[in-house]
Length: 335
Image 1 (cartoon, rainbow, N blue to C red):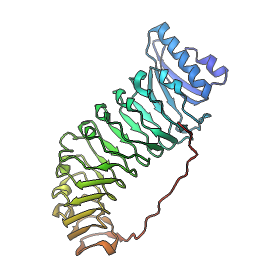
Image 2: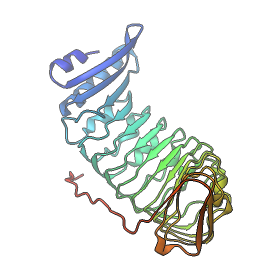
Image 3: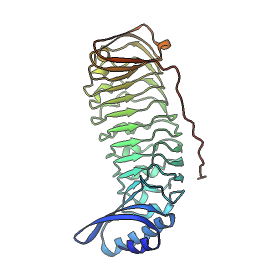
Image 4: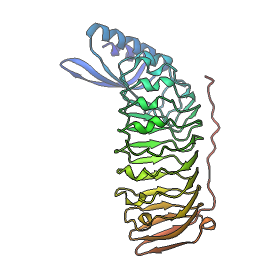
């Protein structure tokens, strides 16, 4: 590899790698300058042609501010890229629309807590090796790519706190490897499919609060047997809470507040010994909540309807009448 030349010219501020049999197998680069990305891409591609080796190439700058303001478009030319890991930087601008046409082996795309704007590329569905997509806390607009369900290996999907709209592609619920799904604080609309949990045996987290979802909470939700965290609050869900939801043996957190739910609180919730955090406020529910475990209930008291709360051990009851919302005014680059 010609990494020495790149370091000597100041293109790379920190790098380390490992080799097997004398050949470089992967590299982790930190503090790379804007010009350095294109230079390194050319060096890697040239080396790949000479050695016939597919170098596992990783950008990782989670702990160091990059010396660039916009993600260089030349990054899509690094066909051997495995991980693009740049959270908590000040990188702005748009993602290349052809992001996944060349880097088909990409496994990890982590760009959260930056200042990206524009649309999420439709080409993302071509990176079929992706295990993690984390684009939360940016300013992305548009909709979630409709073919996102083609990412059959995807385990973690984080798009929370952006400006996304449109419908949630139903194909996302066909990704049987999915463990965490978070699209909090957007304006995504539509309904959840009734059979959403038939193909999600690994799902532990579903977080879709503060969106525009309508319809009923799917009765199949209790079939997601690995669920630990359910956050559906601040939407427009109607109907009843699925009766067996509290029977999920691993479930610890249930947030369903600020919807239009009616009916009686299921006994499976009332008697659950696993749930430790429960928010049912601002609905039109009736019934009893009896807990045999320590439980924290968030409830806007003025919106409770004929609900009695009884505990057999430690508890805390907290009232929240207001919600502080942080408004960010970004210094965005035009796409």
